[in-house]
Length: 238
Image 1 (tube, helix red, strand yellow):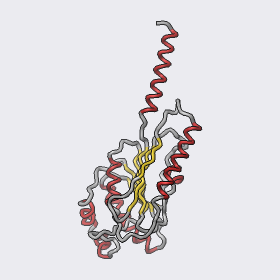
Image 2: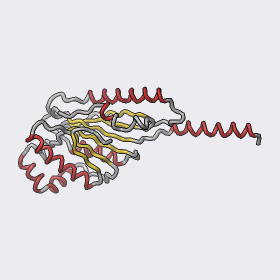
Image 3: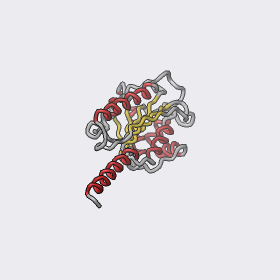
Image 4: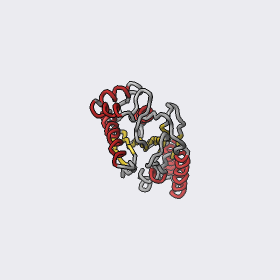
């Protein structure tokens, strides 16, 4: 075979490989953002703050999927998904990629703005909302799986009310009974590889103590299933 023909065939193969890599987009980072709409939260997600922590400055070619939903007095709530498809850095254009990331950030901010507090709900379905997103992420093949929960975590259901001092006493003295009651509604799957961020900014000393009681319970509950759980007022993994 002549050298010219060999060169053309190799060039075609390389081009085909690059195109194939671009067409088979990979989700490197899979994120779920849950915002509590049942009360006014002092910690609220911002698209720039979230995306700035994903390492896109160093590796802008990663594929990112962000699912945004909220806690309310219902089990079925609106869900929005924004996606930044992965690209091959050898065939990609840095300026175009930067513009795509900026557009991705704006899309996410629109979703988050639409989930802001608009009046106190009579009930708060917290655990089931978090558990469903955690189980969904458990099935993801992404390298990084993050669940960000902006909430005071105060369940307020007819069967379990964290505003009731007797329930908080159970939470402190017999947490397994609360765990059993919650997991009877939505059992948690193995959550190895998932990072759960519990994000809240208590406004007072007493509010801090109430929140930490519930947040510590959630940390133990999800850690048993393999998740790495962080309690913080900001999402800062890097």
